[in-house]
Each structure stands twice: as structure tokens, then as C-alpha cells.
Image (cartoon, rainbow, N blue to C red; front, side, top):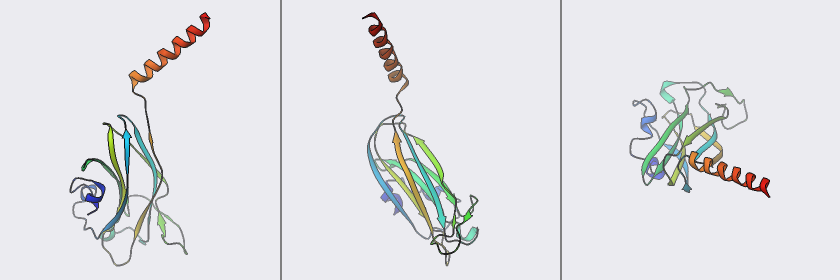
Length: 166
């Protein structure tokens, strides 16, 4: 169901972890972006949080990101799981007791168009643990193509030379 919501090819999310992982459900959010150009860069910061008390193969919840276009997966990435990264303890009195800390990820688009950006968590079934994903500073930055940059530099140089002649 999450793959349909995020416009991903079937099997994308399950393929991000060990095939033996049993999924107990998950949650995701997405944003459709238009006007993406070739070589634009998606970047974002994230923090994977959990109520799981300790790493365990039986409850290895995980977080992921995805990029799709017209219902086809363009990219998908594993961010973290209960067993993948060192966690810091947040202490008593908070919803999530452990976190990975803020990390950063980026992706370069190889074709122009409209895309669906997705972020989510998968719960590997157990009796008690929940996990969440905090995502921040989502941005798409345009990177000029080398020919455009060179042409712009050439035009700027011509304007400087013209200014000196006057």
C-alpha cells in the first residue's frame, strides 16, 4: 500500500532490507514537486527515532526515502534501522527513547519532470516498539549545466570588456 501511495514500483520498499524481514506495517508521507531539471539536487536531513529498547533481529524497524516519476521508482534508499547505526539514548519522559541523530542525504536527478518524494518507516512486528522519522531541510537546488555556466561566464566577461572600452 505504501508503494502505491509513493508511486513506487512493487517490491521497492521490501528490497531495501534483508528479504527475510517481515513487515508489520508502516507509514509514509510524500510531496509532489514539479519543474525539476536535469542535475538538480535533492537534499534533506533526517533523524530516525525509536521506542525499541535494544537492537534485535526480531524487531528491526527501518526508515527509507524514495523518488518516483509517473509510477516508476527512480531512486530509493535505506536510511537506518534499529540494528544499523549507533543510537543515543534520549532518557526518560520522551516518546522516543533512542535516536540516530541528525544525518544528511542527497540525490541528483537525471531527467527533468515532475516527481514524488517519499519518506517513511516500516515496523517489523514485535510486541512493544514503535519507530518514527523526522525529516527537515528538504530542498531541491538547481545546478547549472556546464555549457550554461560557461556561456554565462563568457557573457559576463564580454560585459566587463565592453564596460572598459566605454
